[in-house]
Image 1 (spheres, one colour):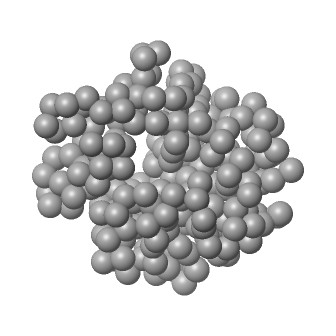
Image 2 (image 1 turned 180 degrees about the vertical axis):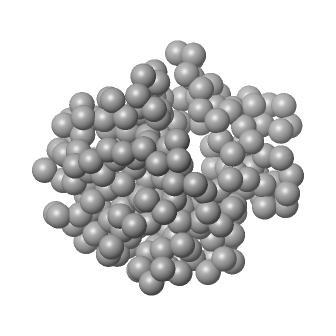
Image 3 (image 1 turned 120 degrees about the vertical axis):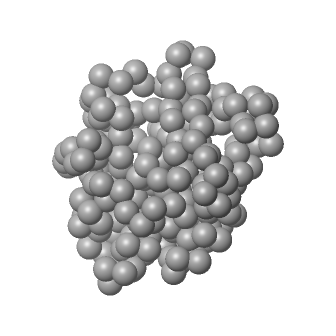
Length: 213
């Protein structure tokens, strides 16, 4: 079972009402807890702040079951979700969210023209290398576009690379992931030709908006 299969299985279980939460553990001692059941909800406290930021065409990277993509579309805002999990894309489409089974590091429609990108639910960890991910996001954004990311609270230890997940069958699987706290974002942005425009907290969640330099 690879990383994609871990998410497929967890999302399928969550959609069926079966407990599916899991934890990724990095050798440094860092942990990241995933709750696919939350992704399957219609809304999570703090989502409204992200949705209000997206005033134009929005790409929801790692859209999961389409919670935010669907909310944007229902609010009359053009949006597209992409995810490497086929199960997530199927569920997103079922709730009326336009979604494609794509890897953000592969071909993506509208590259270089998106007004907004979302990296919600800790998706700044996708791929285990936040520097590579932000460089890719910069390529996807329009020159004056905005990236809206959810981050770990200040003071949280940063980590990146390969974490270990224990799946429901009891086996250990590897997952490329990263944890980026809000207080380490300026260094990351500077190294990837991005600029931090704003940071804020809503409902106990930390967010930031960045733009290309």
